[in-house]
Image (cartoon, rainbow, N blue to C red; front, side):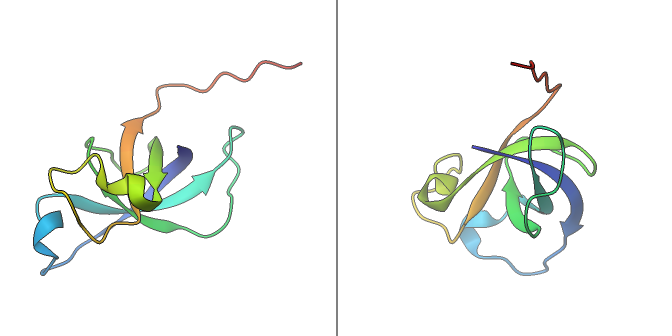
Length: 90
């Protein structure tokens, strides 16, 4: 799983049938200090995330597991909303 921050929505009038009913969101990958890592990605939302929220997401073949279908053309899926991040110094 990876951390990210929702930075926007994508609106599509037509979608692949298997992803109908799911929001598509722009997610900026971040680290535990909330610093940007790489370029934004598109992820399907399965938890009701909103703009500005810190989330965690899965990628690759695991991205289909949270969906109600066996196969879908999905590379990333949001599976949780982060309430807080606590980093302990070592």
